[in-house]
Image (tube, rainbow, N blue to C red):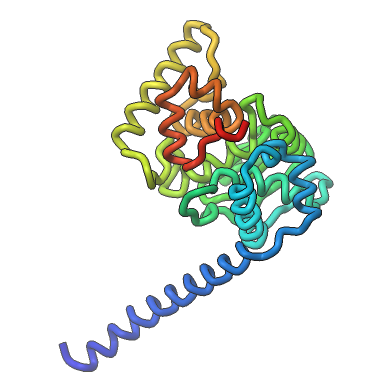
Length: 268
């Protein structure tokens, strides 16, 4: 290869690569700074008042959560609909529930998500294809945005024991969507994919069977819709009803413990 060709490829490949890594370095540097920033006392009070699980977290996880929230709020844009005005209570309450799913593990802070659309209560929203979705509490679209009912997001933060949390449900979808469309198989850092698929597949089939037989289950029946909804639903139960899940679904609990790198039974 002559010098002209080498020079050409340096321009075509080298410069874009250099720009990419420089931007990546800048982003990571900014994140490290934001993570270390002070967390305002008024924000801590919002968490105390509006996110019940916060009160049960050990100090090291609270510190992590503060850092993650700082980064999340810097990178995500909240937009109010139908007259709702976005304030710190809305931003902090939603951010905390989303960032709880990022503790103790490497994260890229929901990289495909930019906008979080907030309605006062249940909403009708039009998707990319123009299809109207009515009576929704939340939605997560592949590569964003997330759409949430503030009424139900607030209720989910204040009630930490009912196994229903719309914010965590929709952000679990975002985790699932990091490697493509929702399919119940997020990027696994700590799990064996064969074991994950075996356990979740078995539990998903069992849930569908029990619902068909009208048998009582701990897991919300909406989880039987498809593997993507199953992953989102079991995330809600894992965080909010860990003792019940550990007792009734120990293998499922263990897979989620390895994936999320947290052990919620230790918080109560």
